[in-house]
Image (cartoon, rainbow, N blue to C red; front, side):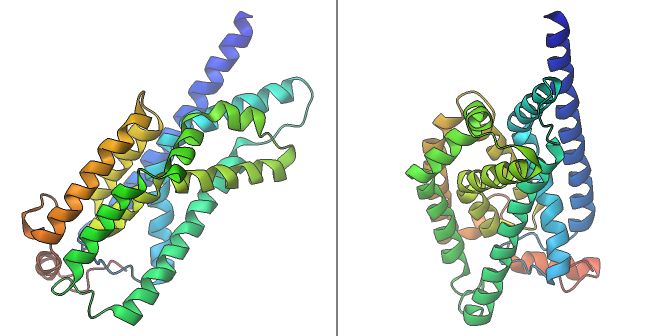
Length: 273
């Protein structure tokens, strides 16, 4: 019994350390790639290749810490099945599938961004309807916090036991499928929070850290489910504030301020190659 507990504890510690180390490495890469960029609303997402590289690393940085309970449980169940002579499924397949789902989400967001900029770029400029659009997006994210879809997805993310044990699938294909399903639930859980990030500055390290913290609070910490109403009220209030007086919102970088900063730094296009 003691040896089994020692194995389980060691397994949990190892997997947690790997995930946190990967997230830390992703944060370091993201900070390096995004340092000095335009951090305000309406930030240009650049070319697809550049954006995709940044998106994958920032997703890993933001999401991996909150996946620790799910991944640890998956690893423990897989290892225990292997100990009993059943099929062993590498945990890496599950994590890779999870990140692939977030990559697909990023590609969809990029496509929508290109369509909107091409069709409505002028009217949505910050000196025209930009603050109203950003404010409405943040407020909509707050309303999303109150939807049944948000509640169902958050319950899934906070209750890994039912998913891993009740929804177990055999073999590598099964692990891939489970990773995709979990990633899809995670997107449903974090959709509103990611909308906030896109509205306030998707390439902002500050807002990225804030949103990552809110995701961790909701998905991992005790009482996280109770924060949805608090977030809803907060986001609606902030959305109205942005629409009414964007220059008074703390931490919200105005596009004209960002352009001046980029010119001062010698990066007038606001993007790193």
